[in-house]
Image (cartoon, rainbow, N blue to C red; front, side, top):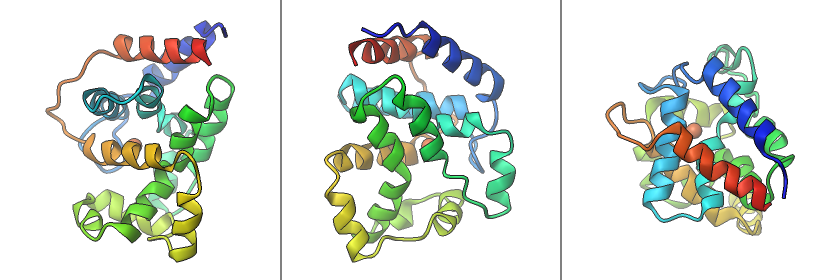
Length: 186
Ligand SMILES: [Fe+2]
């Protein structure tokens, strides 16, 4: 069992420092967005590992100084990889793979679900272009070969919905408790 005290301290520090930043072009903060995604996962009866992944999927946004400015310049800093690398120290693939794949899942859904693209927010359409646009057929096949792709798609749907300025959620402490349990079981 890993001692997750350092992890929880680091997460609290990152959220305290940058969680109040707006979530790229949306009307919620990074912290609200994280809590809403975790809440949606919990409401959807997802396993604890996926609730943790939902809370932490954008942790890469909080790890880089000028993330927003880079996106505005049309540069992709691959926050999903940054987040995955941080989380690998503490979690198995049931957490890190949905995090790593959550951007690819958007490109996947744009290629496989005709209604999905129409539901994306303007900011998400903008980043889709920077992220490579919809997947081609080979990319879809490769994506579906990953054993965690279904979890990544579930996470992606919550990611798209977790942008509601009026949504009520459980507390950060509640969800960090779940993160701690998942880390200590890994
Ligand atoms: Fe997100």
